[in-house]
Length: 256
Ligand code: PEP
Image (cartoon, rainbow, N blue to C red; front, side, top):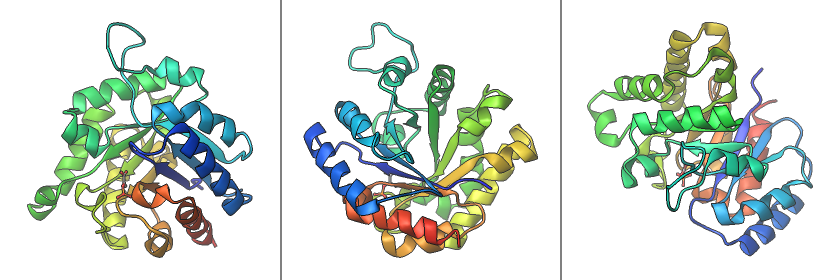
């Protein structure tokens, strides 16, 4: 049984003091969480404050939204996996569509980052997803297959289960337009079949695949009930601690 994982991608929002008050409200709102894993992914500057606040909730982990693949060096403005590990960060988002489209990250760059994260003991939340044009021209499987094969190239068998894959159709991110549970489930089942092809069936069964794209309290439970949907990566709705807590409750309700 794969443990569902609900992750809040704050993107470039919240200062470190705002993060502290967010987490205070969130912890009050959510109370105890036992059956799902919760991850908050603040901007770099709010990571230390978030790590301190997370000590009050055992199911809560802190992640980062990006990193460089090199261990150190002349890369002005960048942050390494080692630096994140030193702050007790557990997860890192890699290959988010905003990084791919706005910052030119290719499958090859994403692959370097995935391998560097794993080498440093960080768990990648590895994002894949098609554009609307690619969906409309029946290229979903081709695009997802390429992103997964190239993005996870060279990952060792034992590291596969450290990775969380996030299926995020670009047309659903920040648009209010969610994939239907059936569309999402179809993509997730396909992703699992690609993973089985590059590792093996039992390993692929253990990999958690999150859905991301306009997840909200009113659509989360049905999505979480799908066989191959193992959690959610949430942007906009996660900026309100109350709605993030409600989405977590929906994921718990889907377990019953
Ligand atoms: C995201 O940025 O990963 C995301 C899924 O955003 P939103 O929930 O706002 O669509």
